[in-house]
Length: 142
Image 1: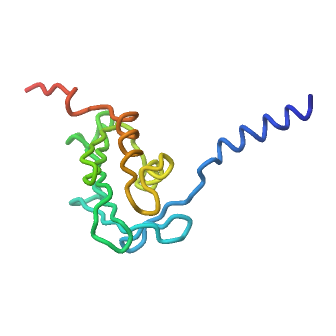
Image 2: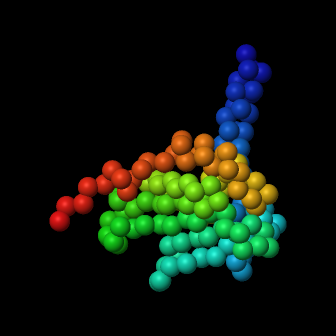
Image 3: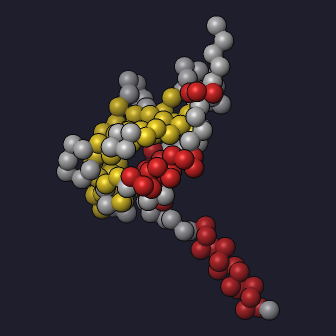
């Protein structure tokens, strides 16, 4: 019985630490566990609201991520993120609010980006699974 409890405890601990890679940004580079992974560029007027990911040492765009605050700076309940994958002509909209590092990690966890390049099949499955289609289901009252 004790062995079973230890195995269950180890299983739950391993689930919590399943994807422990550290994502950092340094001088237009994405670093995964301190190693250059791909190129990037932040955009936005006052704050960083856009992130473009490029294949390593290239200008080939892999993904474009934009945070949309909906023009309501004091209310974050309507904020959402737009992920665009130009090579596959795919768009995903999600209310999931994450840090920029978490957004990149989410793509890596789902194998959308492998070795700094877009995995088109995984990107299609990712969009199908997580797209909340926010723009098309939003009603604007004037």
